[in-house]
Length: 58
Image (cartoon, rainbow, N blue to C red):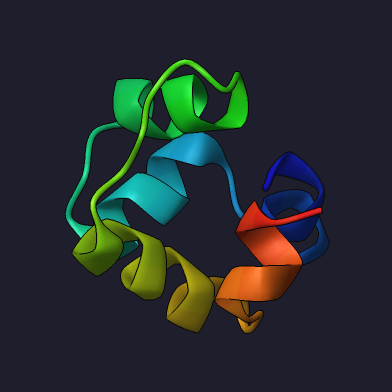
């Protein structure tokens, strides 16, 4: 997710604000230490312009 966020030119705080999450939550997701809800996953994907497969599955 970090690569997609950086490619979109967003900081963790900017992405968090756009998807109604905290910067800490975004950091934990990127570190693989938080399992986001489907709602949050889809919001992140829409904001970054990627699919769920692109972002969350190998």
